[in-house]
Length: 611
Image (cartoon, rainbow, N blue to C red; front, side, top):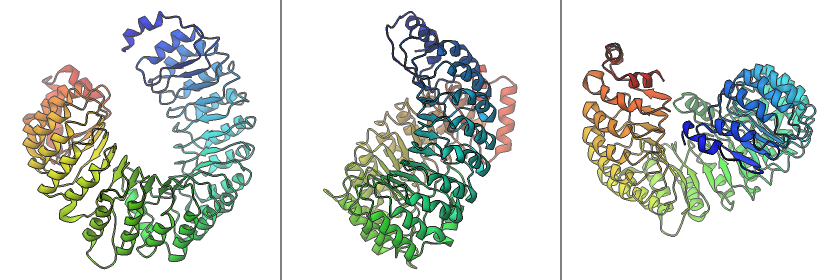
């Protein structure tokens, strides 16, 4: 419903309403403001997440929220709440002493907002869950939160992921964290934590016997930081989830890691991979560092031995760890009998023996749902990458063996040679529950594209497909487009770095018209030119949920076709990222500027460009 359509709902008088969910509904905050006044006595949970509520909208809601004395759960995640909202929310929470869960993640409170909110937080003695992730929190927020947390001894879940607390902020926070003896989940991923934070956190974790989930990914703990942390990890025998991904932990800490993990027999999810930030060079730099300090046999054996003891492990992420061909067979043998459902081994080195072991693993494990083997590397002094990739894929594609319930498959940049399309088709045919498929950088022949397209027609549940750099030509694009026409659930499609040309784009346009849920589309580097863009533009006008559109490097200029895109842009109210960079960027800029200044483009389109 549009905001103007809430009149009918506002007239309703629900009796005894206990749980109000208006999250992700345009205008849900309007509905909540009306109904809150009618359900003050009974409402215990309210969800108005994803509603674009700003400080002003929250101020309108706050008086009614303050009357919800029975409230135990409040979800305001993913709105646009800034520093001013901290004081507004503080006033409302002063009256809500029974709050157990307060979810404020993905807003912009910042240090000032948290400082204004803190007095009320300290009085919520029954609170068990607090989410302040992705809120622009710095070191000052660490000190502020430390005071608020002193009295919250029942806290079980604390999420501070994706902030910038830094070592200073964590140092201020750790004394209060040590008092939270009931804490079971702690999120500190992506917080600019260095080796000093490892020492402080290690001292704190020594007192947290109940810890089940610890997220420290995307920091810079390094070998020294992890060594300081490792003794505390050994004592967390109830741990079920540990994320240490992208922390620059290399071979020096390998044995300490193996020793710590060996005691965590209840582990269900272990993330030690190198995270891949989209479009960034940091990932390749981390990989280079990992290969320069490759895991030795002793360290890999320690890791393999620890994994073998994790009889409940379901998720294993080891991407970019420079595990050598000599060590990979031991690792594959160690995890062979584990109930794995999610495996990420991207960017490691495979040899013939390693592929044999991994092939046996994947052939015998029918539980795997998410499999990532992309960018497999071979450094054995032989040019056998095609042979190795084909062997592994061939085993998984055999009828009656291997995972048949895959939902995520990443084989990006793997080398399968001329038979790639045929083998991929066999694998996809037995995995019809796939929702996310990444085939980036796999070279496909014309015959292989045909086989693959035939298999894709059966994957009607796919929401994300990446076939960038697969050498699709105009005829191949047409075949793939016929398959895409059935995928009406698609939200993300990447066909960049191909050669679809004008005729391929025309075929693709028909398929795009059947994808109303599309949010991200990348057709860059495809030689579309004016004719191809004009064909695609008509379909884009129906994609009302689009947030990211990349048409760069397609020889496009306003004078010869780009203007046809403007009506489509005007029809995309949610568009946040638009890439039209071309080989001749100066000409593009001048053309666009003159067209807009001369008012040739419709007013609505200009507004779209402003967004």
